[in-house]
Image (tube, rainbow, N blue to C red; front, side):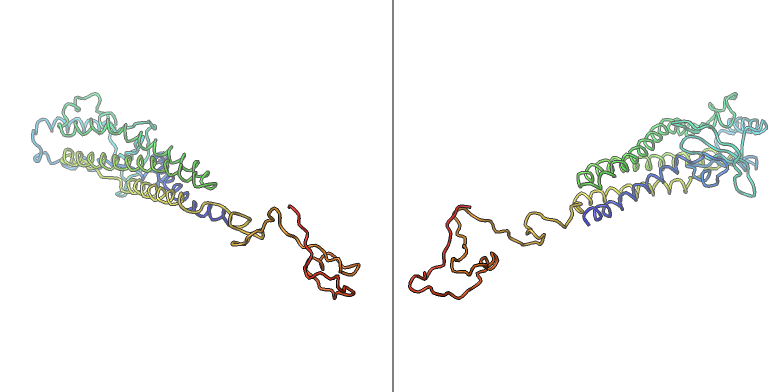
Length: 328
């Protein structure tokens, strides 16, 4: 039962670790297949340009002439069919599509790239204009920060993913001993910290970017929103990872894996607890067979002290039981 109990003890943290890994894997699979609604739905941020031509309210923006120039650049890009209605941003690419009955119909996904960041100037086909210089300072600063932090975010997710894989591999050794659980707990702690860091970074980064898009580009009927599904999966990964770490720590104190059966310290020869094994000591007295037993009496009768009536002993019978003095 020892090994079985040990296996049951680490089954829970192993399952939680695998669940965390699956959540991280879903984040990396986001935007992989444009034909999968699940994968295209796991975006961090969505830019909605479907209402871009619906009478932009330029009166609420300072610098009307400048904004008219910016609007002209967008309209030119739209005329060249460079603008799509929706842009979904993932961890290492983006997907775009047109509106279909009020929902995005994704028809293109960009090549996947490490440390990806969404550059609206390049994606919206505005490279040949001076539109980047026309962006308000708030938007330009937001994009510069986004480019730098996106590299760290991708590294955090990658490190978290591979450490979690290592946690599962090391966790297999925890079946054998509590030392294995101890080492796994250390690896799990590193994985939990990196997963938490990645979740905080992505939530804060895209939350700030959505706020910037909404405040700067809202007059142009360009909206932005957070991908709640993707962020929910990320924070589930955090929860699973930290819960696994607690159970790995618990397994270092319990379920040693030693079998409760067999002979051990404090057990008798029959395996029962409390048994005492008597050992012979030097110069012990051992009873010997009586010379007065009838011929043919067996040794067990002698050993158990079988009594046989004394006959014809007369005056020579001894009052003492004969013993043999020997060194064992």
